[in-house]
Length: 460
Image 1 (cartoon, rainbow, N blue to C red):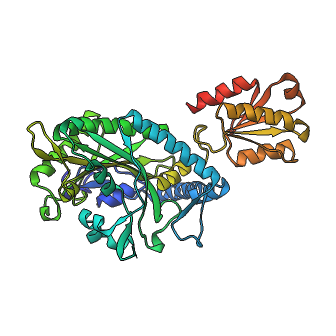
Image 2 (tube, one colour):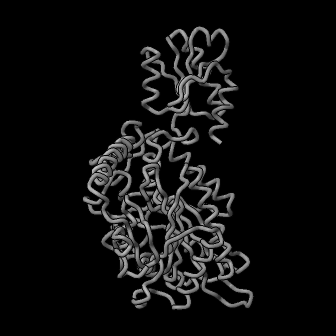
Image 3 (cartoon, helix red, strand yellow):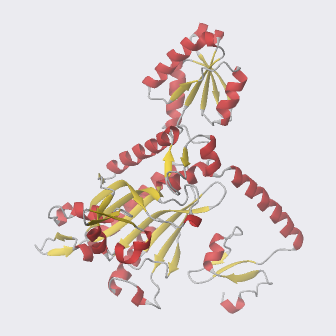
């Protein structure tokens, strides 16, 4: 449809800027890479009903605010005495982070990545070489000691480059994939900080892939498959994908040759097409140093969050002279791909707990089981059950308070603990457990082995 016909279909469409439409809760009705159309306002009665529905949705989202959930479940805090935008992870939040990290590292090792660990500071000269000091100094933390200037790292890439350059590399070594849970620090204005969604110190699930040109397509396809596997494990099934390309009207804004850009943009599109992933091309949205794929997750409230980025870099290989020895015996500049799957871990954590309203799946729950003796007479049996569960690496705790069993159950439900094991006279006599599940209710009398099997099966 031609732009001049935007309102011609019985006056039901109106032309809006892409960014506005993309964020609109009305949704995108028709679009191509340059124009997006959405429905005009419906009749007054429909508007009123829509406003009521939106208010209900706002209330629902407000109850799922990660800041409220974090406080309720004692996961983390941000303390002004420590500093704005700096997160203190409490024991339960740290357990969740550890479980995520353990899974992340195990899956990366299975997928051919090498884990690395890098310092939190580096000499100023490193950041001058990378170009970050010239472009991002206002967002960096700098200090001086004994006449030497240092920077608290705002990103991990220069460190991974130095590990790559620590020895000569052959085409036979490629691709090389370095991955790190790397904590970085960036100054953000106070007014922009928002819980875990926007902080000054955060951890990226960062990786950099160094490869030869012929490796790029299979590497991208492999990466798209890996990303889907990772996100689905956390319960995200719906995604929106964007291919950010250069602005053809302003080629002077970008580094790299025209041939590099055409090849890179085409190969990103080819990888998406090979996996039948629908995407929206975003002309002019590429970074100055290369095109990228953004994969945004859609949460339970139908909100869209930027998460995965797969980014070509035409800047750093030249600045750092990152090369490999080809079959011809000559040096060739490496192709460098930046990628994050979860993004900033703090932000992903916030999105995740809002997505499930704090009802974390069993494998992620900081406390998977709470053991509830009906009175102090059954504490010994409760401790026996706890030791048995710990032997199976099930995270559990005993509520040894003198509260009534109904109060203990209510508290466990508030704390969103997946399983409650109730112990009384009958359970002790039969050497069994009365099992309740969060938000489900009574599952009946089970043996300890049956209980373990149920929890383990749900956690796998």
